[in-house]
Amino acid sequence: MMKQSPIFSAVTLVENRRETPFASHLSFEIKNGALRKSFAIPGQYAAIRLPGTKENHQVASLFAMSSCPQDDVWSFLVKRGSPLTDLLVNLKPGAMAEISPAQGKGFDMELCRGKNILLFAAGTGISPLRSALLWMMKKRKNYLAITLFY
Image 1: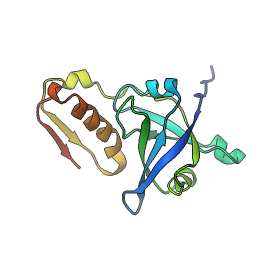
Image 2: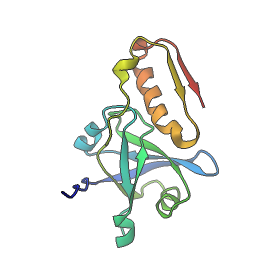
Image 3: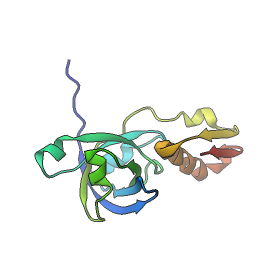
Image 4: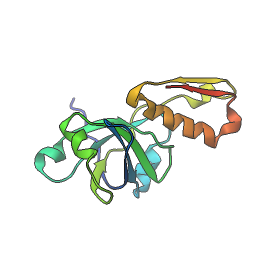
C-alpha cells in the first residue's frame, strides 16, 4: 500500500533571523485553523516546501517546530547545506512557502508533570526543546526546576 502524501497549506514568512553563520530562525504565519490545531504537542515536526518551479515544489524536508503548540506563528531553526535549506534561509519576509500538518507523537508532557526537568541538546536539536520550554513556561506551575544543557 502506498503512503498518502500530506496536504500542504500556503504560509507566509514573517521573520528570517540569522542565528549562527549556518542556521536561521524562520517564522511562518499560520492562518489555516486546521493546520494550526495539528501542532498540539511539543516535539512535533512538519514538512516545508517552496512553491514555484516544479523541482522546488516537489522537494520537501522535515523540520522540528521550535515554537509553542497552537501559536499563530510556527518557527523553525533551519541549517543551510542542502538545496532546499539554502533557499529557505535566503527567503525574505512576505515570501510564500507550504507547510504540512504537524506530524509525530511529540514529547509526553504529562510524564514530566510535577518533576524536575533536564533537557539536553546540541546544534539544531535545540528546536524541539525550545518548543517544550515554551510549553512549560506557559504551564509553569506544572513543573519543578527546569534545566537546559546546550
